[in-house]
Amino acid sequence: MQTRASRIEAALLAAFPGASIAVEDDSHRHAGHAGAQPGGETHYSLLVVSEGFVGMGRLARSRAVHAALEAEFQGGMHALSLRLLTPEEAGSKG
Image 1: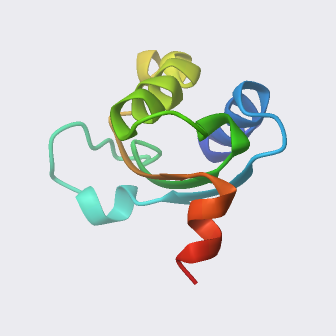
Image 2: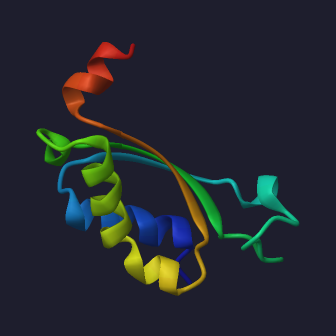
């Protein structure tokens, strides 16, 4: 059975081919909070570095990622913490 984290990565790679993606399940940090489930897989932190973000503002990037992950939200994912960068932005952060 595929984990939600691997489904998230696959969906993002389909939406943003060639992207560098890091997915972290933060569900354990949200136990008892809204949307938390006993089995976890509800809260995630994502780092996505993609050429697809070039020319997009912060809100447009977030909307694009949320659209790519719509099925996961419908399936019980509750929250994302997003860091969405172009390769140029990622290179200047180091």
